[in-house]
Length: 144
Length: 148
Image (cartoon, rainbow over all chains, first blue to last red; front, side, top):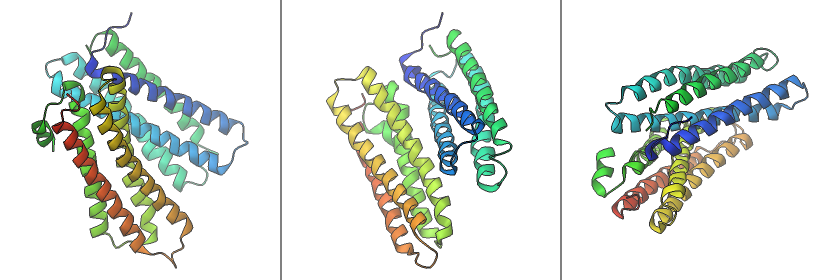
């Protein structure tokens, strides 16, 4: 059973989950495209930009949730513990998308045929990790 | 900016963080557009970096606006004042994103030999003005208790 989320966090948490899902499916579709070996350079570029855009949105929503927690749930240790754990996983994801994929795509000519596939698999793993932390936080009532 | 917003009028706990974030990001975006204009000796090679940088702030603004809009749909669906302001805020963000898009198109169509920095300075001015107008709209919305 899922615990209730207060009005203060409800929309933000829902959107956070929605964009995480979009990132997960986006990286999966990207993987499939690479596996099919039948893609255009412009399609790859669009997918890399799409991942970056989704990550930007996820980061912005997380920052709002964090600000709300700091302002309105100062004495709620549970929410802070969850947010710190969430932040660690989010930073790994952020590094992967903003730094590694973005940089390698623009500077390493062998990247698309090499490490990119593994990096996309890693995105899926991190997203699942974040989703599990979030679900656990919601179940425990951290966002009430 | 945060205290300034809170002191202008009543904003409910549900919206205040988003409203403050909107004002802050408009402020940052206008500040960055001004800084780039004043401190950079612009060459065509600077353009991709500048557009990606400005786009990041504009996308954050857009995300915050979307969240605010979703909250209005759920909790203030019939509040006409709130909607009229959110539409005006959206138009400013859309204008900024379109201007950044024009800067990108300019880069793809221009060679180093016919690059005219004046056009880029004009676009930066437009972003600055739109972001400043965004701040004014947010402040007016708070004064009108649109997000109470």
